[in-house]
Image (cartoon, rainbow, N blue to C red; front, side, top):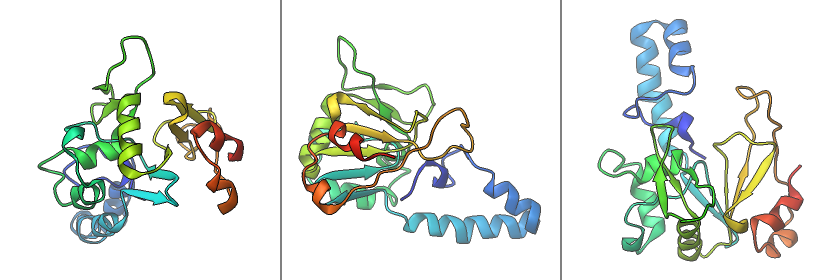
Length: 194
């Protein structure tokens, strides 16, 4: 799946050193050509979201918050997000959004301190799960101790990239088709994280 580390060139943040490694290895001209013509083209083939057995909605970052009441076909919205990323924020939000911590005076969304994306609240999670006919959003993008569950079990963050965050434990999900069919919330899902 595509994450913020595989963002289009128009996103001015590169959270990995791949472009610089290519420049160092192949020189300025060839390194740029490889990255822009080959690597970015490959990134565009990666999916932004996956639905698993009408139970799980898998994304890297978070759920888009803008104009959610206008969405009639979430699959089309996601399918066209990569082609339209300069004109709308859907792709940026899928790659960068994080769950808003539940507090009193709940908001649907808030601005992110990251500078990209937004924080999405429980109501956004509920709307997306209804639209996608799934039960739990499974995402990465934030360091935590293996996993964490937000929005009363609607969202599970599964952390797997330990290298830049050695103080956090990585986790992964092991679940059978039979177990998947009984999943109702991220709290149920957390029993299957190793």
